[in-house]
Each structure stands twice: as C-alpha cells, then as structure tokens.
Image (tube, rainbow, N blue to C red; front, top):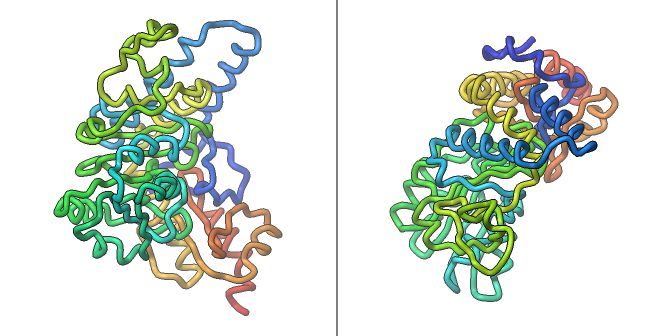
Length: 352
C-alpha cells in the first residue's frame, strides 16, 4: 500500500520488494525504460540518425528548468557533478576559501581541493554549524541540499541569506534531493543534480543551473561541438562561436542516458514533487517510529544499529551502509509493506 496520493502511478514501476536504496540509484519508471529499449533497438540496427535521440536532451533540460524555477537559458547538461564544477572551481581567485559540510560527498569537495596548490582553502564544519560559519572570509559555500550519508536536509534559505550578507557564492549539489524535495534556484549561484538517484534516470545524465553572474565569471573548460551556437555548424575547424547562456557549458551528452532521463523527469513533474515528498517522508517516518527514532523531514533514514546490514541481507532487503551507519531511503515506488518488512527484519536487534 502506498501513501501520499501516488496510488494511480504505482503500476509504472516493477520493484522487487525490499528496495530501500534509492539514495544509491533509482528505479526507472516504465516510460523511461521503454524509451531506452526502443532507442537501443534502433542503435543495434542503425535504424535512425542520432538527432531524434538528442531531442531527449532538450526535453530533460526544459524539465529540470521547470522543476527548479530556472530560466532554461541558464541550464546546462553534463555527465557528472564533479565535472560540472570544474569551470566554477577554475574561476576562483588564488587564496579563495570554500566552506562545506564535514561529511559532504566528495564530488562537491575534490573539485575545489585540487586547487589547493594555488591557495584555495577547503574548510569542512559539522552541518549544524554551517550557517554560523558563513562569515567574512568565505568566498564560496559548497554543500548538498540533502546529505548522502546522513539524510540531513539543508536549511537552504538560511544558507542563501547568510551567504548573501557576505557576498559568497552558493553552490548546491542537489543529487540526493531533486525528485522528492521541493527546491528552487532563488539566491543560488549553481545547483547541480545527477539524475540517476531520485530522478530515476540512467547514470550519465547530469543537469545544472548557473546564475548569469556566475556564467560571466567562468570559462567553459569543456567546450566542444555541442556547446556551439549552431551545433551542426560546429563540427570542424578553428572557428569557435559558443552558445549564449549556460549552454556554452554543455558537455556533449551521452544520448541514451538522456533518452531515459526525459520521460522520468517529466513523470516526476506530472506526479508533483510535493506529492512525492509527502509519500516518501511519511514512509520514512513510519520506519523511524518503528526504530524508536523521532520524525524527520527527510526521505533518508540513517541510524547506527549493529547487525542491521546482515539482518537486511538475510531478509532480502537492499539498503546501504554509509559512514558506518545503516541508510534506508524511500521513494515513490516504496510501500508500507516495504517498511513493515524492514522493521520485521530488524525487530530482533531492537529487542536485544
């Protein structure tokens, strides 16, 4: 049984019972799966050119823009979060200070740290101290909207307000948030999300927002034919005419990844992120209550319960262990039956 008003969409997924690991990767809805199978069949026999496949890149870009309240001209496509951060990191002046969470996923840490040889300083603080640590001297705040290891949801308005006071840039990794947590780019300089988790797409389709002021500061370090103003006129030669707006930061897309991404993103829009949020958080809180934990606003539950990993494995439940803690994540295809199955598996540990 589902909760949160998603019943009419439940038949679009075919999860094996006990999948509680969307924070590792999401399961494709049937429209995305079928679209991908169709183009793979075409690819196998050479039935078409690549241009129809690439229409999915445009659809994905437009869907992402609508989700986060961005102008589509400020949205770029790529392959990974870390690669998307390269031009931003390269634009930081020598000696700049980057503030992050001390458990931040390294795709939003290493792109800054590789510039330590020119004085870039990366400082990690506990998440509950992040906002208070946004003080003069910080040039850029790089943090996840939802932490991968703990599931903690960032107070994004507070981060934006504190950063605005000192003129610091705000760069958000939304990979563990977009698809279930309502987000907008208001006050943010960059918001980047890989789509293979909560947006339930093939790995290799990343989308990002760059504010106009940040676009002006950055050099398109990965510019290629796809970043050209006229894509089809940018195949050969030494003349370069890059696209206006964020499209000049495009990386040439992995076509099939975006073929799967476009219908998945559009389905998330159709269902509504608010609806998905209610469903996910309700299930996560039901699981939390069964563990004796207080309620939360996150779809990810992280807890230190010795023996949980083995208990889940024995019961056929797929979750994850991150930073030594059990991590269970609940998405639109998760059900109350999944919650009860998980709690039943853990019951002997809770009573010991």
